[in-house]
Image (cartoon, rainbow, N blue to C red; front, side, top):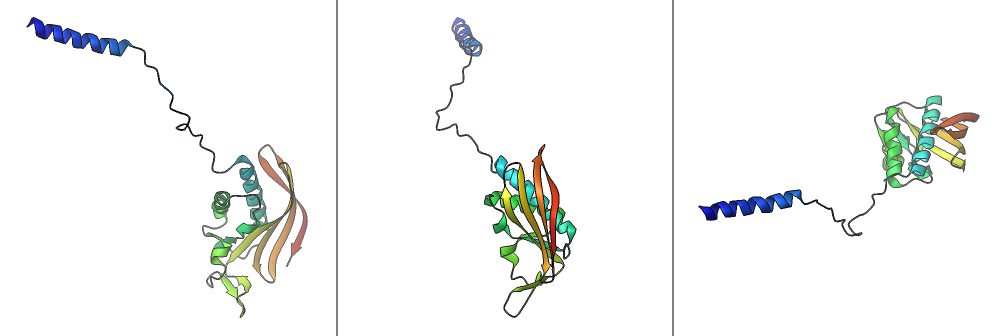
Length: 177
């Protein structure tokens, strides 16, 4: 019986010592500590906000309908592929159906094409893109295009100023087709 009591006391003593010993975390090696970089940089976020603001403004000037919106992603200078996808997501406030133009440009349910397979007009939708003239982190001169036919498009040009986290657009010229 004394042996059992001694073994039990030894076990309790060992557990007590372990429980009272301060624990220290040993850092992992440098190879294990990788810093996760954001998928979309702050500069890209700022450009996304500008491009989306300008395309929405152009769409609101005139459009061919909201059944779909196609976007020429190759006009979105300075954006990664992930940032371009973000632009598409943000334009869903104009239409629930937003597409990369390159993927739908031959879709005859969206566009009327001529005999040479060139676009003639949209079918209840709009093609949006931008023409960036000048850009800095605080100012830009940019044209938004809302195209819905060979004889239906608007080209509002803006002087954009970035202040307090928002782009303010000032219309400086308007072209209509």
